[in-house]
Amino acid sequence: MNKTSFIFLANGFEEIEALTTVDVLRRAEMPVVMVSISDSLEVVGAHGIIVKADKLFDEVDYNDVEWLILPGGMPGASRLSEFLPLNELLVSHYSGGGKLAAICAAPSVVLSPLGLLDGKNATCYPSFEDHMGKAHLTSRPVVIDGKIITACGPSAAMQFSLAIVSMTKGDDEAYDIASGMLLYPQHHQFYF
Image (cartoon, rainbow, N blue to C red):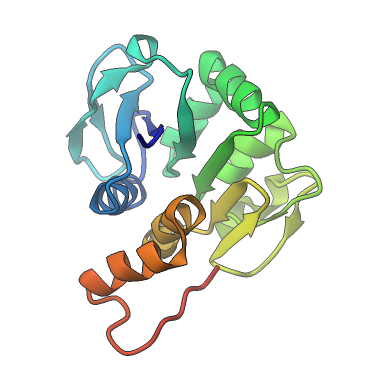
């Protein structure tokens, strides 16, 4: 049985990044749960789209986790960084060998202050690069370094999601999912 991945939503999250990731992982038959860090299942995205999360943060058992996933968007990423139980979960999961994925502002606003990107190759939304601390910045849209995936923003959401699938179920599964969405009708090329 597949482990469950969790994507965390705060008011002001980037809708494309969050929902693309959930969609692609579910196409790959990877269990993924949308978790609200507020006291409501309804979370309002950065562009006014209301999404109903699956669970509240405190309702989730985080014992058998595949991925912890952080969408960007502002002020959503800042709200994620201010939520101490999530910070503790991220550090604990990663230090125990777990996998993390963050896109847009989330690498710089959430992961970097926790020291999780120190010495890692990573990327983020360009205007947040000054907040990447001891990470080694790259210009690639999606970067995999060990058990951490980072991506630069909304345009990279599909590649980011496929990187998560690839690291979990292999390149062939990621190619099948991409092909089914007509993303690679003539060639097999990823950008990570």
